[in-house]
Image (cartoon, rainbow, N blue to C red; front, side, top):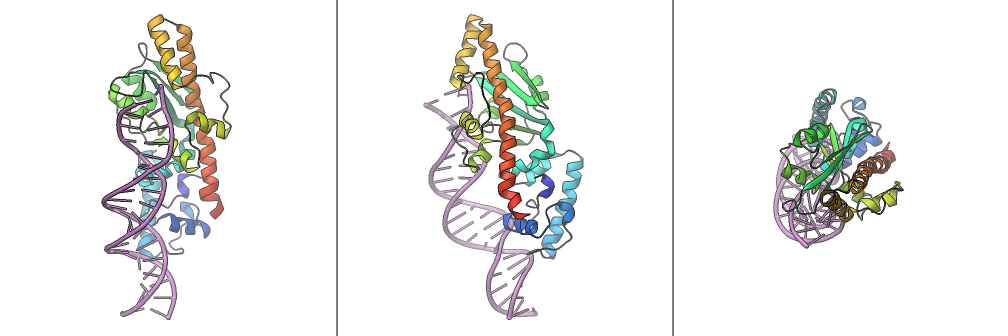
Amino acid sequence: MRVENSFLPAAGVGERTERRLWQHGVTHWTDFDGDGPGIGDATAENIYSFIDAAERALDAGNTSFFADALPSGELWRLYENVADDVAFFDIETTGLDQHSSVVTTVSVHRGGDTTTLVRGSDLTAERLQALLDAPMVASFNGKRFDAPFLEHHFDLSLDSPHLDLMYPCRRLDLTGGLKQVERDLGVDRAEVDDVDGREAVRLWRRYAEDNDEAALDRLVTYNQYDTQNLQAILDAVAERLHRDVFEPHV
DNA sequence: TAATTCGAGCCAATTAGAGG
DNA sequence: CCTCTAATTGGCTCGAATTA
């Protein structure tokens, strides 16, 4: 589904009312004609003014409008609208605590290309800002880990709508961390499947302390797989949520 | 028009769960 | 290890829609 199927942001419309609209054939903004089950004059006006503002925001590419208007758990509805320019990102660090650890690599998978910035060479606030200034960014647990970590260490303003895949996954009973979710969804990770977060810390140390270029290559490859798999996960999750939330009612 | 039902929206407290 | 976002639950209020 796309954001144009959503009526939830209109005042007076909650999940129940939206579902009833869908069941009565009003599945898209253009289908709304001013009435419906449980829709009186006041709510109809609210829906019209939402649609008006939403259409302008969509034309202008103002994705923040929808991030603010939708309940945070429903931001996935915006994915199809911007799928070809979502910035999937993942960072590697020397540890979990942002005060005692530093960022080692950052990978961003966007528009089919994967870019990795490496500490000590091209990892700068400017490069990060350019890569992450997207209609939407996506991560796994990045709202609590990656984004605050980056903002603590770099002079950045990350204000693109941020879809943290951990929460939609949990909603679908997909838990146990990124690797487990990949296994459950059948997302392939043939290479570097013996690397995990802790191993990433060791790989960086071998590169930084012993000049082990092969260790860095391995770390970068691992980091890139993570971001590419985020896209595979979001594709699967968006499809499942579409089937659960939208399909049964149209 | 009056009475009644419905549901949105808010608040507070609680908890699960993930990252390197 | 450490930390904190967001989902959840339950209660409550009030505006709005429906019914008589």
